[in-house]
Length: 337
Image (cartoon, rainbow, N blue to C red; front, side, top):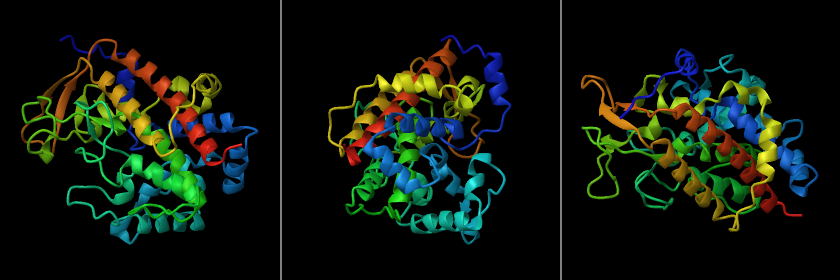
């Protein structure tokens, strides 16, 4: 297979420090901004403003990642002060207390396994094998606290319904803040669809036969290409999308997306199915090989096909527009006219 020709853009990207934020701050804020544009003049828009006060969906969209700066092993101290500009508004004494309180409530409540992240970090993703066409509870990589169920839990709080365990969202403001973030995450393909590989770099289906925990690629985080970590590559936005530059064009594109004909309970899984489809596309034409045997943990090298950058750009644009449209649909379903 022909290998990817690394462009100047990709080489520059590889030299930059990678954030752990899905879509990066720009992507999440773009999703929030699109949804706000679509909610203008609606009952849902009024309810959002009432809950957020002087904040906006665009501003709070990153909070779900900012809370990752709280370190449980350091007595729930905030360790990221000044590191991420997008989190600065939450780095007051009251803001840090609020982040620490959330993490304390959602740290070990899901009883994480020895090799799993803290619970609130697991709310951001699901790892469905690409052999499947649909999200289905019970598949390897799904759980009662994955991103599909996290969205459902946040919606339940906003609807004045009991939230399912293990989630512990304090109030409607916190639920709305997290919902905005999770819907963005759901539309990043590597937060939903995942490749599982055996020791020889061959694709395996973890739902057939005995599941080997060592076969997971952790949503692409264990895949290294010449341009860096594959998951981080997909989190990043091209320069032309950053700092709101594409919000108007993406909002126009989002307005053209017809609302899904499904119940509010069904919507998160339906959109997860779309992300699985996107993940299949982003892995098309790739090849895998095991990295050095002495390297710690799961790690594979991935070779990307020609014109991968163009494919990635188009997919990101579509996904961001859909995410904004879908967030607006959820909120309009919670607070209909």
